[in-house]
Image (cartoon, rainbow, N blue to C red; front, side, top):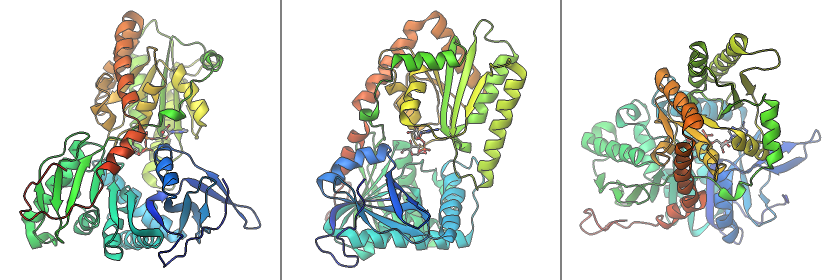
Length: 505
Ligand code: ADQ
């Protein structure tokens, strides 16, 4: 990546501004500093980057986000392909209060149905508001007249509302990558009306699932029924109901604008999947002792992902000798995540204790049952793991979508891999041919695992046809389709004279 100064002039709308701007918590790069303070930038690729890069390149677009370093923001950069990167600076206290605090210890557990207890802390909220304002101002400075600005995720829910004040001329989209909870849970949030107001600054609010869009619509209905008692004017009106892949609902916001609400299930970048060499796949299986069945888990080490539950299910299966003639091996890859938060440290130690206990009880010298990697692995290596695995274990208690499930399916174009998938992962709505389980019920996880092993042994054709159906689904709906369908639905919605349901949006 080429690093040079952008020609953007903060504070003025000139030649350096962009007609398409993405605002996300993180920039698609990591900035490192040499001992002499010289910054160096390396790309941090991901699905979102892959989906948005072509659009950004076409429009000489801008990406506003945090570069991953504590302290002042590095200078703006332009990538070799002409995308401008505008870093936003975060101080240590912003990182603690805005990112670790309000984003990941208040909103994250609240939006994931209280799997951990959210902390409501006033100073975290103040920092969240301040940092959101910083991001909004940075976006306002780089957006050309009439630009489209697409704001991403739960860390930045106030940005649409602030942007609307700063730049009434722009079109604003917002997409939530995590679940949106039921109104009863959301209403626990002491700053609920500010968050709703922030989101309603957008012209279009996107969720992965219709259920989440419906939760938001129901919330706005309740809020407007509560009238001034909840702090928002009682002029929110909801019409229609969203259906998968279509925006059919709109809310009339307090300022008379209509705000579209819809479901846009995200997917993966199929282009980034190259088939790994067969010898690497065979070598991995050999290294793991040539098991009859290789099971795989790939997750951020997050308490929402249900890693411990799947290990406990495996332990019980081993203890009860429910799979007597099957030599199986489990490879669990867990990316370090949010390690300074107590709930994450606890999740890690519980997982590591279970791995040690299972290997102590059931392993043999040089042959652990569970191989555990606590680190990030390169995409090429991950592709080998996916291709080598017979059974993929995706057992979150709650997940907006879960791209790992889709990556495993993409990696099995014609083979008989089996996917054990939690009913509470967004992906379960589309990957209906998976072996579904309830991660809160150990017996349900055990049944699903048992069924995959039994089918792999006795009914490989059944495994094959399930995978074929899921593969066709993932092929037909990649991340590019996701971005296109959101952006095609993103436009200002002027109030209609009757303000009644109006045409399907
Ligand atoms: P995440 O919670 O991070 O995303 P997920 O959708 O599974 O969850 O994406 C994780 C990504 O990280 C995958 O692309 C996976 O390949 C990669 N990954 C995981 N472990 C890795 C490792 N050890 N090494 C390298 N790569 C690893 C949030 C929401 C999800 C939603 C996505 C996208 O929580 O529900 O699907 O955003 O909207």
